[in-house]
Length: 223
Image: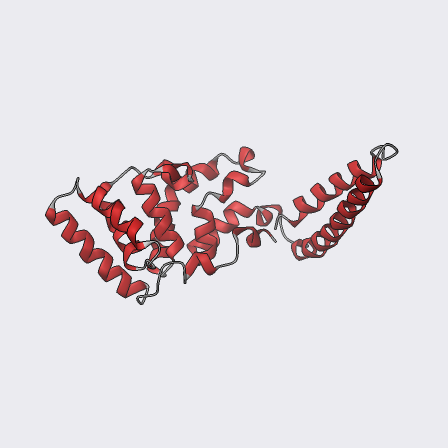
């Protein structure tokens, strides 16, 4: 759906290159310029082809962020994970639609939790980082979800159950650290929740093997 923006952007870049003074460029620089122009032409051709898919659609149907939100609500896990990751921040129309931020705050947590119920490890990681409010707090979800040690422990434990031999020690270390601030009952409840969730929704599949990590990149939703 952003093929139109890609088309305009590539055309603008190509115009700058073509109109620029190439008289003082070295042979190597001229070769690089020609290579860049060839790449832009290929990009333009692709964008023109993709933009044809938008013909006949109303303007509101061409807005990526609300369309992604609607797809997520309808159960599209890949769209949901990209939405929760904060794709709207890169949407060039965001400043014209501040209501999208309110929509995000209202919908993102539930979409992430629904993705977990669909066996998506990407959503598990997003929620865990958000509740931990760690270095990944720059993620959009981390800015609207309050830090919660109990939930952080639960999602860490879930990730530990799906961890490979390389990442398991890191999760063990983090679980030990987070667990110091929890009661024995909270830890037991967290362990039980993680075990049930792992078996119920992930079919004991290792982390990073199913869900968002194997889904098309969020940029693929722009076509």
